[in-house]
Amino acid sequence: MKRVFQSYSGNTWGYDIHTGVVAPFDMPISPRGVEEEPFFSLQPYPDEAWAQAVARGIGILILNVTEKCSNRCRYCVYGGAYGHERTHSQRVMSLEIARKGVDFYCSHRNKADGKLLLSFYGGEPMFEEGLTRIRDVLAYAKARWPDVPVMPSFTTNGNHLTKENCRFLIENDVQVMVSLDGPKDLHDRYRRTLHGEPTFQTIMANLQRLHDLSPDYYRRRVGFIAVVTPPVAYQRRSAFFREHPLTAGQPVLVSNVSLYNQTLFDTQTIRDFAQETIAAMNEAAQAYYQAALRGEQGAYRFEQSLFGHTLWRLEHLSLEGQSERTLGLGGCCVPGVTKLFVHTDGTLYACEKMEGYYPLGHVSTGLDKKAVLDLIHGFERLRVGRCENCPYVRLCSLCYVNAMDKAHTVSATCLDDACIERCSFFKVALRLYASLREAGISPIEAFAPAEQGIFDP
Ligand code: SF4
Ligand code: SF4
Ligand code: SF4
Image (cartoon, rainbow, N blue to C red; front, side, top):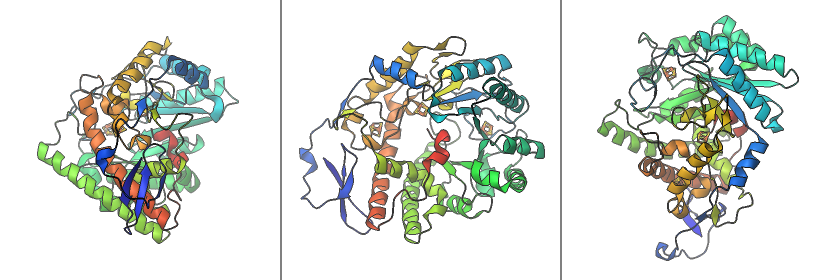
């Protein structure tokens, strides 16, 4: 069955909801009323699949080395405006817990990569004892597994890039994602230090230092995370990342500020933000298309972050042995196996976004199979009758995170908003994809998901 839509030049294309194939469409369009639902049948995750996932091994380890942070960004989920999240604290992961986390990962890791993929989280991982713990862990891993290369990564607020710390990043070839929301006024509006001071100028000076110490390292290993807040100001943010000498050509991950259960934004602001976001999505798709016609799409990293994953999926969609009519896990991970997040106290979670929501065991005792399967099956129950009737299911990567409510349980209400946003997005992305193909342009040219892979769930 096809979803029919038009490219920018007005030609008719069809998206096959079962196979994900997009092709020019020249058949008479059947009225929507005769489409039969459900389109798909969800296959519950079988117990045996858990054993297979464990046998493949854990993809990446994320250690939450500290809950301390040198910033108090106004939109921070740990800043008190989100009543259901933890708040900043002085907690630091002990060396014992950190070593147990690394040991557990190393004895259950996926060896296909041939590397130890060690990621660190906070708070601010480079703040005070956080960086000490990172140094400890890297030294421990290198001493214990001298033959396996270590690939470290973390996200940082960019406050702590002293000369010495920059050298540490360069020597260890650390992949860093620096939080930077766009030009000075947009960034400083929300991203403030502990003492309420703006951070933009410090970060840019620090980035310049890091760049000057090793332009080669900077080009290969530095990326940015931009949080979009009211006002969306899409064009200004996009132009900043495209044009500033320290951001141009570097990967950018874009996400919207969380609007769930918070006290920062009133109802009208949220409504306006939702409308602005839809308009921005269309503008961004058009801008990427126009850039591609000029052969400049490689410079449009902000837009690539928005559309790249979906364009890539449309090019590489595989049903992985499933029939066209069945659904498996979809965009969901196998919690604790695809990634493994270790809290400062050693509790295990699926990833940093699930911290505090759904414990899956402890570094001392390992993953609790029942807890993992409970999470998978809880989300599956929400997908029955919902994703089974969704034409965009083959493109969707909504997961447990999008369904977690303030009581820390999976909730249909939370997922509803995410589904509405995603379905609007997929329509825009399909139009962009078909328009690029029509113009003879590879939709994923210049987009390299692998370079962002470990940061992109
Ligand atoms: S730097 Fe990150 S952890 Fe720290 S306050 Fe800002 S958003 Fe929160
Ligand atoms: S958008 Fe919602 S309904 Fe559609 S596949 Fe994703 S989670 Fe399911
Ligand atoms: S974001 Fe969702 S799919 Fe990705 S690791 Fe976290 S829980 Fe799993």
